[in-house]
Structure formats: C-alpha cells, structure tokens
Image (cartoon, rainbow, N blue to C red):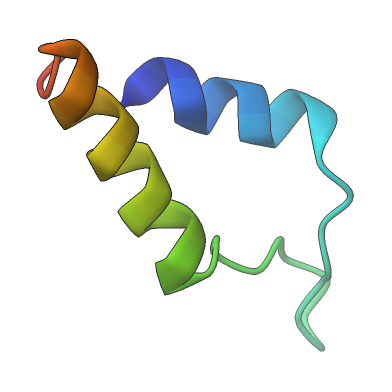
Length: 45
C-alpha cells in the first residue's frame, strides 16, 4: 500500500485545504489500494 500512496503523492493532482495542506486521499481511493494489495498478496508491502 505504501507504493500506491507514494504514486498518488507524486502523480495525482490534489486539492488543498484552506490552510494550504494537501487533502487526504478519498476513502474510495484507499479502498482501491487495499483491494489491489489484497489481490496481489502484498497487503502490508
């Protein structure tokens, strides 16, 4: 999942909060990461 997060951080256009911080990924995006990791057998890698 770390790989998915790192790719999201480097490639995706992200919205900012009013304090100019990066908004978190959507729950749907995180669920897709978990699903992809689970299906490849690397849930924790």
